[in-house]
Length: 335
Ligand code: SF4
Image 1 (tube, protein in one colour):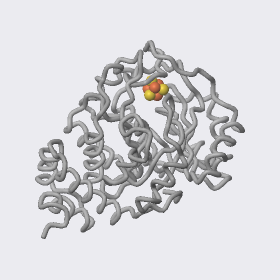
Image 2 (tube, helix red, strand yellow):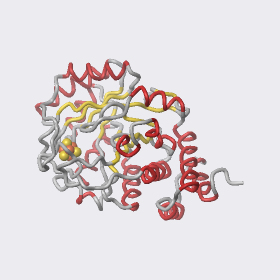
Image 3 (cartoon, protein in one colour):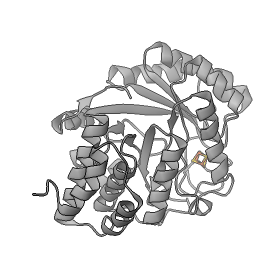
Image 4 (spheres, protein in one colour):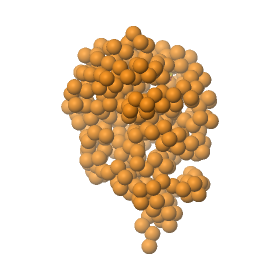
């Protein structure tokens, strides 16, 4: 008797045994998953969720971020409100004082959040701001929270300084596949992004890197991104769903349907069975404001970004925590 469905059982078996999907099964998944609906989609979601439970457990890691430096970015990421290339509106402020960043982290820590990411707009945080960033990292690390940073394509010496200050992980999304990337950003290359991840690997700095979905990418692009992240050694995979922002080149891009977003999470769990898959921006946009927006956690994800996102509002933290407990997660453990 199948546990999920005949096909979902075929997918789950090698993953539950501690392996990865062979090429033939991956190709089958890329044919059947995009078309799966109703009971077939539910069966794949249950299978992906069983892989999550077996491989990374029932602990949901909660992270939050602060936009430590915002706006007037010289990059041209097509989805982003902060790009100076677009007609979009966003807050503009220089790098915040380290004490303000530490205070925001402490507020989140009191609410049960265990990772806190400092995010700055721009291609790379300039040398003149690295000292303030290192102070903020040290202040957060001193509280026992995992201090993460997202400062663009930093040189290796800056990464080292942040690591010495107590940086727990470096965050840098690849966003999409190598093929689709030039349709999304032309001011830096896919290889520029990979080079930062390579520096992190050399330094032994854990990598948090994922993507943004709903950019007009194909299923092949989604699978290629996942396999690139696997190869890059990312332990944590942030998954963002596009919230189209007025004034950006993607303002008219349709929002992903709930089922399409569920299929994306299932794909990622099946291709990245042992990684932490963290649902970040766009969750309320796709899934709405109620606890239904925890649906990706029933499709194989095991972490959430809580609070507000960089340029869009997030879901209620209290609702998230109660909802996670309801669906069987221990909340607030750090990974
Ligand atoms: S995503 Fe980051 S690098 Fe790209 S435009 Fe926005 S702030 Fe700049």
